[in-house]
Amino acid sequence: MDTNTIQPTTTKIRIRAIDVMRGLTLFLMLFVNDLFTSGAPAWMAHTKGDFDGMGLADWVFPGFLFMVGISVPYAVLARRKKGDSDFKIFQHIVLRTLSLLLIGVLVLNGGRVNAELTGIPGLLWSGLMYGCVFLIWNLYPTDSPYKSVFTGLRLLGVVGLAYLVYIFKAGNAENPEWLEIGWWGILGLIGWGYFAAATVYLIARDRLLIVGLFCILFVVINILSMKGMMPHIPYVGRIFGVILGGNVPSIVVAGLFTGMLIRAFSAEPKRLLSYLVIIGVGCLVAGFVLRNWFIISKIYGTPSWALICNGISVLLLVVVYYLIDVKQYQKGIYVFEQAGKNSLTTYLAPDLIYFACWGFAIPLFFYKQADYMALNIIGSLVWSFVMLWFAILLKKIGIALKL
Image (cartoon, rainbow, N blue to C red; front, side, top):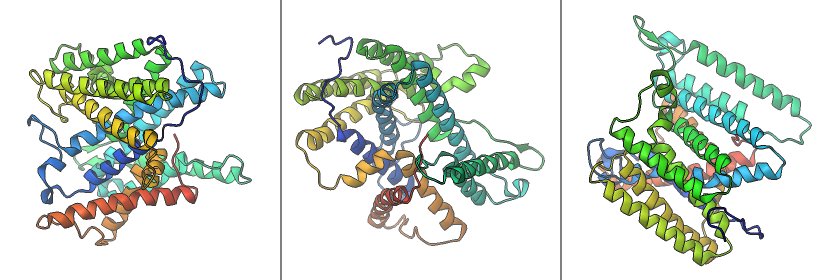
């Protein structure tokens, strides 16, 4: 086999580990977001920016970004099988990216609402915003006799979202402020990473060598950016700063490279596992080598942190793949697999419960106790697990986001 160009296996093999691994990272994202860090071990929380090291919370998000990259070749190839041209696929990539950027910025600004200037409380603004997001991007049935109703719901969501954006005010009466891009929010970072990986795949198609070179390129860009050696272009840098910084793309494109390997060697599990172990160990070694010049820091987005996270993601994927797809272990994976197939809903839906509990002073989160570590941790674990089932329930009643 020419390793520069992937020749897909003729047998269609579904790798369940991909969905399960994505579901596991979502579960951990919900857990670390809910965890009351004052009552939890330091290794579970985010480390401070200047600290050379990382905790569980510092890996979880890059772990999900890595899984975003793994899914890219499967998503693009599915569209090609439908007959979509590369131009049409790129249009979809841009539209999906813009959707993630928009939602990311809106979620980011939800905590900045000045209730007096906006005219409604911040929790209500955020709750209505989430409702509009679900109305617009819900996956409605395509063969339903109620298509006109669904169109009306989407239109209602668009009008509602436009109104919420229009009335939004932050700051104070003397210095009112509108929406700000900031760091784009979690979903915005996912959007930029997805855009980078999907565009790279369209350019490289199935040429593994080209994607590998892009992986290296983004690591180099990340290094140059950290050293202040990248050119500063004011407006372009503000909009495309995530890509020009190299950090997020280096993680997602590494996932893309891994996804292409999985697709190519899914019929040869032993060979695939050996390649993945080599890549995972290689990333860890490279990350610790770069630690001589860059601390391990999520806050600063250092290349050492990104490479170590990639190494952890690959090696964890090796374990999940070996158990589920090689040894055919099935017990208890359903909830994680379904969450992995419905990731955006799984991530956003719990916030609606937060808003309701905070707004109506419902003491649901009684377990967040600094003096009772076990209660604090177990409570957040149970919450996260229940939220996976909540997303599954929403999907069963026809509520599931699809960009």
